Length: 264
Image (cartoon, rainbow, N blue to C red; front, side, top):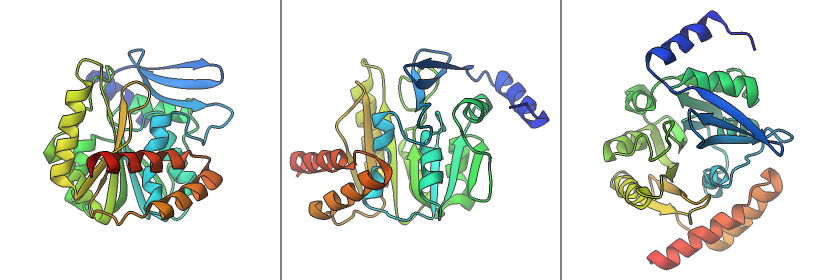
């Protein structure tokens, strides 16, 4: 892809802001995105570019168990664009918005990770996620919010305060929900995870999380209004998701069921 004047301007901005460089790697047909470190910030299997490769990113879609036809899905943190592409392809009735601070990440996703150009349904915006959720024009406009915000070191969520999660809740519709990846290095993982869960619980009616995967990834789902849970219905929904989208949704239901048994 040839750089436009706007892309060159944004790349200059990125350098001025000291945002990390983006590199890609490829192994056994899986392409990965990195930000000035070995930490994997996203992945794509080149033979199936619209499928979600990493298990924790798949778990970010567990809101599908509760909401069938969202009208607006927002992703904070583009990564390798897996969630953005998946929602754009699989929910043709929905607007999909992705917020990414680093213009280099956006350019790399277009060039190497099959991210489509913006259109009437898809908007990838180069801006700070905190500015987006604090903008009152965005409040009440989103059905599903997906958060995966990390810097180059990927040691803890870049945003995780109670005020941030309250701003996220403000962006959601009355029955909206949020999924978030809570990752951290082994030294601070549990403390960071617990702090983020506590902050989420201040802002949301119900918060549940799945068993960790990939060593230190815990995905939580937060509901603005706690849903009625019927596990028989959820397993039926999981079967439909697996058939339609090739996602292991029954594992999500198993995780939710185990959480409820442990926290009853």
